[in-house]
Image 1 (tube, helix red, strand yellow):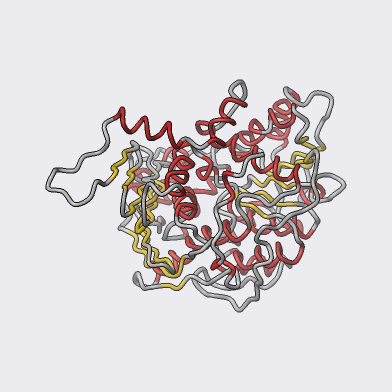
Image 2 (cartoon, rainbow, N blue to C red):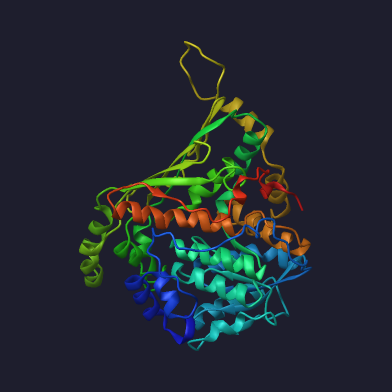
Length: 471
C-alpha cells in the first residue's frame, strides 16, 4: 500500500525512523506534528468526542486497508456480520496485488455477488478508498507508521476510523487524532481486542459488583516471544516490526495490557493516568538471535538493536492507584498479559487465572480459591455479552479465542444503531501515548514524565464503562 502524496512504502519506513512520525506527518502535509515522543505539544481539545454519536448505518460499508495477517483475520471476523446484513466489505487496499487477490477469494466465500472495489498497483491507489462514495468505515490494519495518518485521512474524508494498535506513537499524533475526531465528528476507535476477552469482561463485572472492594494496584503486560516472526521476511513485510526495535527503546506495545486495566480503573471515566517512570533492561536476546541467523543482512543488524529485552513502566493515576506495565517480545517464554488486579477485598492474578477473596485479617496461610470455587465465581460473573456472543458465532471464525468477534460485533452493531462506541478516540490515544512517554523516560535516565490530559478535564465525570452495553 502506498503512502501519502506518492511516497513509497520503503521511503516512508526510512523517513519515519529518521524523523519520527510527527515530523514526517508535517512533511506530508498533515499538520505540524513535530514533537518528540515525550514532548507535550501546545494544543487545544475540548472533550466533545466523549459519547459521540453519528447517524445510524443499517449496513456499514467497510474498506479494509492492509491485507496482511491482521487484515485477513479481521475480514474473517466480519463473516457473520456480513451474512446478517449488518456490514458489507466494499473495498480492499494493499500495495501487494497478491494479497488483494487472496482477500478477494476470502470475501467471496461469505459475500457472494458483491465484489469489493480494489485499490492497488499505484503509489496513491489507497487514497481512492477514503471516500464516502466507497465506504463508511476505514478498517486500518497496516504497519504502525501508517495508523495515525490513515485514521486522520479517514476522518477528514468523512469516514469513521477503526485502527489496529497502537493508533499513535508520539504525543503530538495522539493530540492530532483527538482534535480531528472532535472537529469532524467522526468516530475514531483503536481496536483493542483484549478489552473484549472473556476473562477481562468477567473481571470487569466482578469489579463493578464490588467483589474487589477498593482497587489500589494492577500489573499488566505484553510478554510474547516474537523473534521468529520479526526475523521472518514475509510475516511482517520488509521486517517493519523488527525495525522499530532497532530504532526505539521503551514500551513499544502498551495497549493489550493497559486497555483492560484502564477499564477496571475507570480511566477517563472518573480517574486518569497522571505520570510514569520507565526503565528498560539491557538488550541481549534479540541481538543474539540476529547474530545466529544465516542471513548476512540480519547478522548486520545485531549491533543495531536499541530496545531492551524487558521494559517496565510504572504509572500513577489521579486517585492514587498504581500500575506496573511490562513489555518483552525478545525473550523465549510463554505468552502472558499478567492481568493482575489488587483490591481491598480480592486479588486476581492472570496466566493462569487465579482468584483470592479476602476474609479479613487472619493468621491462616492464604491460598488461591480451589478450582471448583474459582470456577463457580467465573460462572457467576461471566459477562452476559461474552456468553451471548460466543453462542451466536459458534459456527463462525472468532479469532483469539473469541474476543476478536466480540470486538467487531460491538463496533459494527453500534454503528448500525447510531450509538456511542464502547471505546472512543481518547482511550486509544491515551493508551498509545503511554508508549511514547515511556521512550522519553528511558532516554532521560528513567525520569518522571507527566501524562498530558487529552480530554480537557472531561475524565473527571464518573460513568460506568459502556463496554457491556448490549445490542
